[in-house]
Length: 328
Image (cartoon, rainbow, N blue to C red; front, side):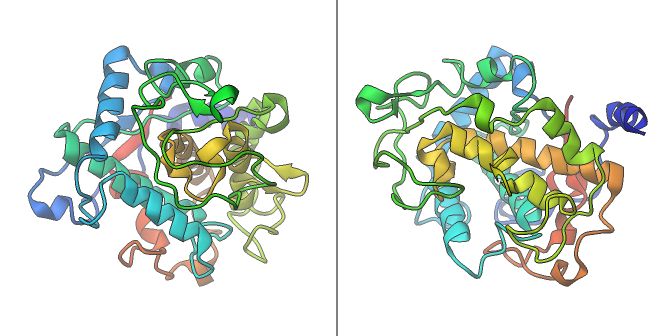
């Protein structure tokens, strides 16, 4: 059975889930041309130097342009504020909830749309960081892309790459609560991006764990539909990473990177978006193999937190929703 699923997986990597018009939002309704679908979100290992430079440039441009969703904040920090509110407010359904994956899919779509709007480049997509893929670590933390670890002698400020100290300023919204596990053991500061790489063996997902996210069948979610949902019967919680043995998968990577990635304001680190593109990719593969029939019915009509009434079913078809597919 596993070998058959692996063969099926090979045929799905470039295949979308259908085609239709993208969701209307403040960007597409303002006169910016619709992005032809589907575009391809590539693995970080497949990016050439020009593609890396285009993505980095667009991300940095977002800091100097008002948000299309809230003109009182810049286009990048809008996403930092939204994610922080989504994690910290008890009424949010963006984490520890069946809508964790739909919420972040819409969130990524909006970020990608803003990348295109501020840069004028309608072909930009968010690359994905397949944590367990050979060469992905070197590719993502290269000096011409995300930069490397923080310097412990400078309170773990990142000192290499385009987002190094002096080139990238974070928005300080929280400095005490760790989003995923344990306590932060150094102060999170306004100003520099910080990272504090951990033990890769302890928290980084293995290739087997990644494959088991979608090749081993489990319903999409199960009671109590939160961080205590058994990972044996909850794909969502298996992937989100609230494991009985500690943080794993999505959560584990946040904790391992450390710094702002470990906080509720984790999108301060642009690495967040590459990380969540991988999370969304694994959900896409699960959907293509197992479908959406086990998504809990009682959560289908719930508006996603602060996302203008969008509901989970509107996000189920990745290509129709986001105008993208994932490369291999």
